[in-house]
Image (cartoon, rainbow, N blue to C red; front, top):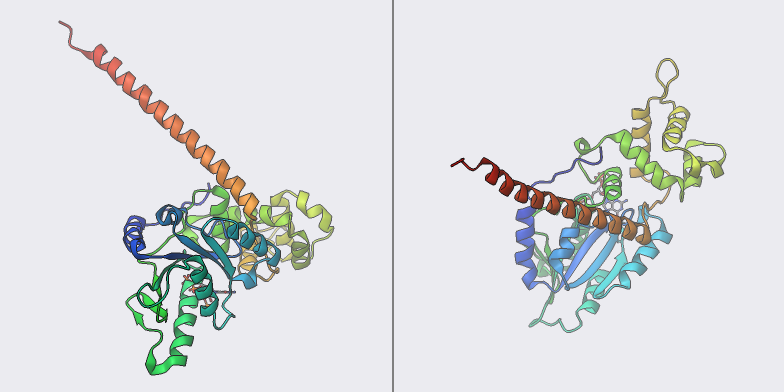
Length: 321
Ligand code: G4P
């Protein structure tokens, strides 16, 4: 079935970002460190083009530190791109953000050429929390001086450093099936867009290889070495049984078991987990691009056929003289 997610107002946001981007030096994209690839919006990459980019892997406290490092290295190796990781426990993240942005655009700075930064991120990635920290801390410190003034959607983090909030809502865009499941598992797409059992099974597919010991510990599963090879439904059934999600007659309630797994993942109760590596995500993206190209080829072939068919029909149906 997949994820049935059709966000509205994307065109309005796209236009608004395209307009704002003309006067922007650095684009900060806030990502969920547990799913950095899936929580990126591909539309943003199209809009920002060659502009300097700062990728902020937020919620690092929930993510696997080793995999966070892989993602940081991956982004830092890209042209005009820098990456840092962050979480809400960092009480003064402004200095790190400002430093990383300034390094990206060393020719900007000073009152005549302030660094103008746009911050974007899909909902639930932690943008409001970060913005509140940025505004709150600085405002509290500077008091009446108002070193930080929130004018419309702009925060002045320094006299020559302006941070603009995204105009409009940057909804997640699902172009990769696996990415859609990861977004759903993280809670970033609406509950009505997916089937919890299906998402939990996909989540277990992603977890059982790299995080079998965490699953075994959380659900008291035997034989940790066996977990990666288990069929997802068998694994979900085992988890349901261990957690008492059993209906009368002894059958496991898979819906209940799915809710348990999803809630446990979202609250990081199993431990620090990252669902995807850069290499994996690049492979999924390449496969999705290939599928899309194939779909386009078929579509064109169909419309060509239809076109030539129509001519044939026209001839066929021409009135007899
Ligand atoms: P948004 O503006 O991008 O939509 O996200 P928002 O800041 O509202 O954050 C979404 C949820 O993520 C909130 O939890 C928030 O507390 C949590 N969050 C934000 N940053 C971090 C972080 O670095 N680490 C962790 N662990 N959580 C973070 P919530 O349960 O929806 O609300 P709340 O009751 O916690 O406020």
